[in-house]
Length: 346
Image (tube, rainbow, N blue to C red):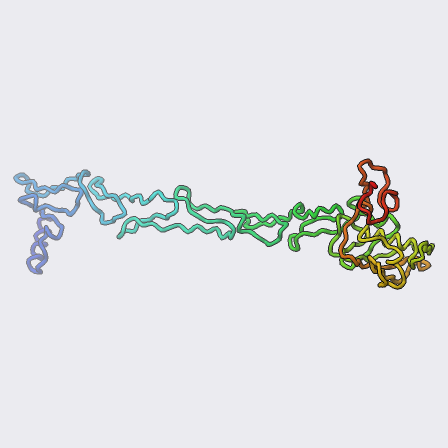
């Protein structure tokens, strides 16, 4: 006790000599006191009293019901065993679209969440209950290829899937497919259907066309048939019989008529004479070079004079009669007057 009194006495002396604030103001309670006001340990969690008349000394009693403040706005403060203890406050605002935090000098703060999955075809948004939402949008995917199904997937982004069914040209003689880069491909294939191999009937195959961009009405030959003309080769040029004397052999006339498949009129004396242009032509026949064994293969070119013409009932390689008679087209069916006859039943 003597040591404590001596220490306090020295502090009092220093305060007097050097002009220091009172010991009570400095937060060091005096050993002795006369009133409660003389006792202050600068601790909100103690009750400071003076034991007047007994020991005349300060008594500091823990009181956890006292309010206290640790100076940090990010804590809820309470007295525990005589010490001010802070518990971190909850800054959660209940919004999944914000990042919540506490700054010691300011308190709670929120930072908006940026939702971006870097996928160009998703609509990025934020739901306050669940957070970021990335919704695929197929309309944002377009490869400009008409025959692909354009889809958006959250993980992969745009996916372009070729769909052959979108390339159906209603032509049984073309192989329809979708190329992811080029689009629809409609490749002639005479093996797809019996009706396609028209060139094998009369022994003639059309191997090219003046305008071979379109295969008309589902008919194709070994080559292509055009809308304004056709080129071909007659492999059966012998015997060189010319029954009507028009300058074209009978086999060549069959070949040309088969290649035309009823476009315009039949090859006749006016069409196949040696002096085209003298009137009456439906076609211009241009003889080509002969080739093959014994020069039996005759090349030719035909140009339509009446413009694009339609396939008729007597040239479509079908039995069009209500009651089929098994006879198909001119000249096999006597009901057909010519390749251009459009009524096979009379």
